[in-house]
Image (cartoon, rainbow, N blue to C red; front, side, top):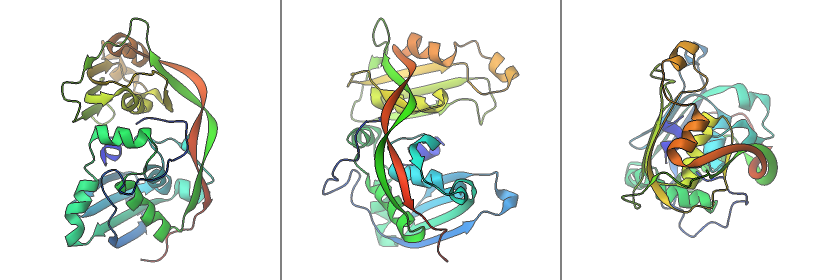
Length: 283
C-alpha cells in the first residue's frame, strides 16, 4: 500500500507472525526489470517514491527508507527501527525503477491498493503484505540483504484514551478507509491537519508518529474504527508560519479533538537487524 510512501499502523510488540498461505493483498508477482543507479548529486534534493502502472519509481531515496517499507510495520519509519546498516546505506541516495511484466500489471495494482482496514489488520498481526514481499525480493536480489527481527527497548510515545473517553465518531463505513495528512511542510501554510475515515485507533497511532516525531505504541485497548478530523499548530516549522495558526499544539489537539493521549515512555518494539547487505549489483 503506497499510502505510507505517499505520506512520506499499529506498532505491536511481537515478532512477525507466520505468514498466511496468501499474503494480505495477494501473492507477490515477480519483477521483470529492476534498474538501480546512484542519484545524480545535482538532483539529490528532489526525493520521491510512487507507483506507476506496472511498478514503482523511487528517486533520490536512501536504501534504509526502502528497507523500512519492506520490513517494518509502520507508515512513518524511523532510524530507531533498523540496526546494523553501514554508512553508505544510510547516506547514499539511489534511483530505483522496477517493473512487472504486462500480464502481471493487474495483480500488482491489487497488491498496491490494499485498503487501510486490511493494512491495519496485517500490521496488527505482523504479517507481510504481498507488496512488502515484493520489496523484500528486490532487496534480496540486488542488495543481497539478510536480516532478522528482534525486540528492542526504545523511547516511544504511548497512546492511551484520554480522560473523558474517545471523542471521535464511530466509522460510518468500517469496510473502507481513507486518510489525508497536511502538516504544512509542502504547502508552506501554518496548518496541521489530519483527517480519516474508517480508521482503527492502532492506525491512528501510526499516522500520529510523524508529527509526534517518534514511535507510537498503541496502549489504548480500543478496537473500534473511527471517522475524525484533527487540526493543530504544526511542529518544526518556521516561527511565522506556526504563528499563523490559531489551533492548539499537537499534543493538546489530540486530547481535545480525538479523546486520545500521547505520553513519553519506553517499550519493546520489533527492530530490523541487518546481518548482511551489499552495494547494488550491476544493472
